Image (cartoon, rainbow, N blue to C red; front, side):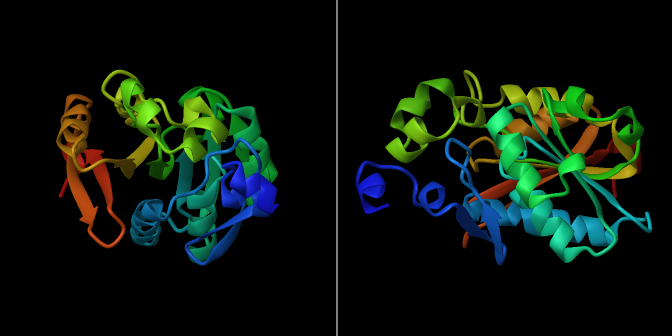
Length: 224
């Protein structure tokens, strides 16, 4: 194990788990390691799920990786119905160890989800890749060499996947559902504009403690 760490493999992949929101999340080789900053995304998702008008709120964790955010919601909101999806096969296999396996789907964003969820999602949460392609080479070797590129590469400006998530969100959200997406502080304004172009009002939440930023979007007609 020491030899693997010296060679640069992420500690969480070596140990087989990461601590996230007080939970021990299974982490397998090659899968995106949950970052502590993503605890802001999880906290907001938990809060929104508890406030949802549905007696059994439906939460979907898109681009789920290990399923850490979904697992945090499931552990904190007793009645939550949690689903997750990822395009990376290794991530899906890993997430099925952290969430009910029959509620973790493999595929490209919404194409992975069962039609039964359309129009029913109270909280749609996504830690989508948001690193610009040209910046990947500047990332720590732990990420560049040991995590799937599809979990890191957000396209030219880092926001390609954010565009796609926002464009399809209203068709899947419940009438008062909310979309929560992790982004960077520098990209937050652009992410908010992306949400606006898809018919949502949005706001950004920042955490200095975690060095994290999340943009939340709601259907413009019901925004408060």
